[in-house]
Structures are given as C-alpha cells and as structure tokens.
Image (cartoon, rainbow, N blue to C red; front, side, top):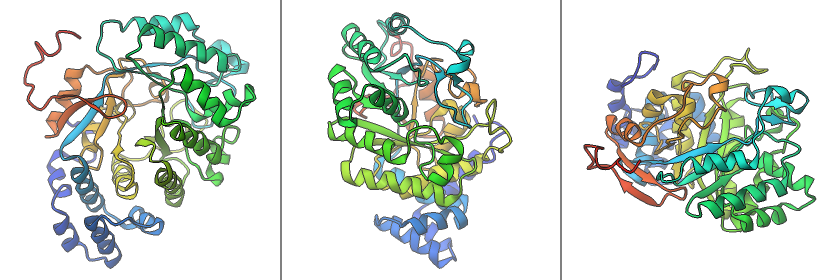
Length: 402
C-alpha cells in the first residue's frame, strides 16, 4: 500500500491512465496537443518537444501518454528477475561529488576489498537457489585489474554456467582497458571470451560536459561511455543505460543525455532498458542540493518513456525509489522494477535511499505488482519470460524450491 509520504495516491491513478483521446481533448495547449497526437500515432517526438514536456506537461498529461505507450508495448505485464549483486570494492580512484558509496584509494581503510575467493563464496551461497543473474559493479580499485576480473568471471562461469554474468560499468571498463593498454574493442572481446554476458548501465550520470565536469570530471566522458556500450553491442552483447537526475542539471541536459542514447540505440539496437536514477543527497559532497519530489520522479519516468521510443523497457530500480514509489511508477510508463536483490547492494542505502535493507522475496515482488493491477512476470536478463505469476494465488508450492 502507498504511504502518506507519496504525493500521489491510488485514487489519482485512473486519471493518469485514462484514454489518450480524452487526454488530447482535455489539452488546451496546441503544442502539447500536437505531442499527444504524435504519441497516439507512434511518431517520434523531437528534443525541443521533450523539453516542452518537462516545462509545461502536467503530471496527469505525461502520465497518460506514458501509460498509453507502456500498455501498447507490454499491456499490464511488469517484469522482475531473481538476481543478486557482488560489489568487489568501494575503494575508488575517482571522486564523484554525488557519490556516497566510494572511499578514495588514499583513505582505503574506510572501505572494503573482496578477494576472488570471497566473491566466489557469495556465488556459492546461492547454490540450489533459482537466481538467474549476478550483477557485478563497484569502485575503481587500482589493484583490481583486467586479469583479476577475467579470473573472477571464469571461476563464476565454471562454478555455475547457467548464471548470467552482468558486470562492470563503463567507468570500470574504461579504467581496466587503459591500464591493460587495450583498445575498447579488444578489451570487450577479451571479457566476452572470459564469460561476461552483458553490461549494466551505471556510470552514465549526465553526459553533457557542462554538468559532467562539475560532478564527475575525472572519469570517462560521454563519448567514452557510449563507445564502450557500442563495442559491446557490436559483439552481440546487450546492455542497460542510466541517467542520474534531480541534482544540478537542467531539463535540456536530461534531453541531451537521452538524445545520445536514442541515437546509439537507433544504430545498434543493443540497449535492453533505460533506468532513471534519482540523485540522493546523504553523505556526499552534494548534500546541499535538495532531492527531487515524488511528483518530479514520476514525470521523469513518464517523459523518458515518451521520448525513448526505441528502448523496449523502462525500469524503476526499487531499492532507490522505495517499494511504494516503485509501485506508483507502474502508472507512469515503467514496466520493470528490477529484481530480488537479496540485500546484496549498498550503493543506494549508503546514500540515504528509501530501502536501507534492499531485499524482497519473489512473493513480495509479485504481491507488490499485483496490488496495482499489473501482471507479474519473472524474466531473465535478456527479457526472456521464465514464469507468469498472473494465476498464482498461493506461494506454498511455487516457492518451495526457494
């Protein structure tokens, strides 16, 4: 159920999910009406129109358009997967101002560094459990080089070959490749041959240099991030894409970011999903910057769904938003709320997210999705359907193997 912290209630959702024709009729602004007509006809909106949605589109308006697209693509289906995270280290050579997670290498006594055996023990702790994905991301540690991670990937694959290995942000990969003196295509090929299967979307932050140079000037730039994902796509690997929003960026910076992603997706068709990541201001160098409201979060999801017409999926990362707001996002274009996680990530809890112990059972995820009249479907990393839970009323037998 929704808590009083949410600025939007269940009673308001039917307004946002009403027919697109009603939405068009109710709009007096001709420029917004033209955008709604484009959405109805499946026509791509421009960058300028996207900025206009941020500036003038009401929450109900953009929500209705986004939900129209979501239901056209996926109906009521909402995806989740059974996954866990490995975070090799929070020691990092970079000093991003928004980061509450990493500890500079100079102060590494405040962080953690896992050995390959310790990480393999985490994988082994899931033996006999029906997880389908391990997600490996962390800080950029100067001693954890390409050879180190290739050994880790090979050992995970040898131990559990059915487990999909999704790992390393473009920031981590850029550092690995430069240190190994490999080109991006060479580095990606070596990791794929070792057993890496897909990339997460982290490290994108905001691409525009005016903002990037203020919040994370010392790590890979937009062109580098995009080049790494393009190389992965060209090898037949899929990846995700993110954007850190709700800090010092302006609407045009958000649109610039999504425009670069949309252009690469036109070229490679290798992105699975887009994940807007809400800036959290606890315990970092940007604590003076207020966080975005729940209403603005929902507008961000909705407009992303409208603009990114070539992205098949839009994901809300529930440990960041909180369970209630992730539930709410399903009325604003979102069709994926990530996975079970199993309390195996610290990135957002350290930044003051809603979920300080980010773990949900499959039963809890299914219930959360069903509470807002959507259909829960378990997927694998590449969105192949594993199980549809629409007809499951009791987990007594279904969950016995878990």
